[in-house]
Image (cartoon, rainbow, N blue to C red):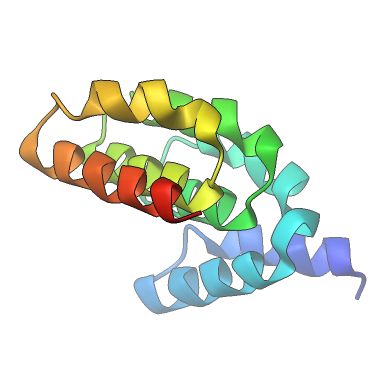
Length: 125
């Protein structure tokens, strides 16, 4: 099985049971930038549990092409997705996310807290 086939299989497993989805997420994070292009389209998945995992995978990739997708996910209707996307911006390490993170500080308590954590992570980078 090729690397891209394994990546695709893990992406399909993101919507599985909690254990299966967590394992798929960890595997995709280990693939790093190689998984980014295949993962990006799933940021629009109808299932919030897939979207929040995609946000985290993209953030951990540290790939600059993930930035616009993560910023868009900070406006997702599901708070879990917004929370993980906000934290993922800190993981991404791209300072272009600073205005978005600063704006999110005024959001709900959970999102505001995530934005503060992400900003701290960016300052350490």
